[in-house]
Length: 264
Image (cartoon, rainbow, N blue to C red; front, side):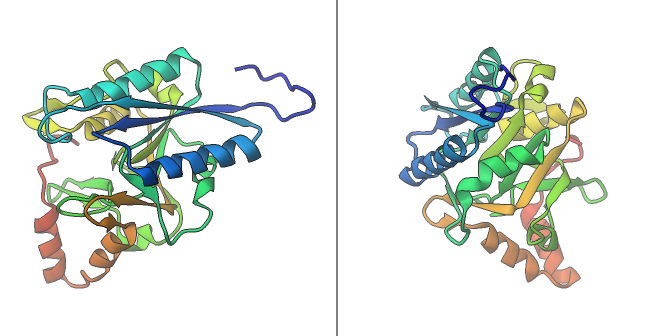
């Protein structure tokens, strides 16, 4: 990208490719949300240019998150990465086809610009899983218990950027292309790692951390996950806030239990 000023306008410092891997369809709310991000960034941030791409990744395996030999869904993500690198984009932003801005959060159209300004390797807003156990998809590994644990309720309501995340979902994930340039293809893949099947987003985070890159979550921004219901980060936070004693926390641990020791 040229950094020479043109007609007195600010230098273009960042170029982001927004990508939506379509699983069956793109939700209308997701289309509106992506349009909001693009309109704000293109009109009010002269230092950033934006591109958008959508790829049909259907059909995949029975579940897009449990196929361990690769799928069209992961292939779509890899095609996005290749395009971003080929066209010289500085950042790649993955947005899943079932995400929407939080209805309770104003100015969500500024989200992309805010994440870009944070200047992290890999960063995303806060959102929850829309399937069991309905937890926040910003997680750490607890080697003492062998559990994946979402960030705490206090962290989730802090509004701060948390930089020691080990897993971040791809509902919305902004990746600096310096990360992708340093990683080997395929960047996204379903794999068996030490006997455990890893979905493509978990596997990507694992490989990025192995290269020394950091994963962050911006708790000041919330996204809703669209499904049979609207799954909000606040709902997941409230569940955690009720776990005030060891017995309640033990129940939550059982609900969230997944083998992770081999992945750390």
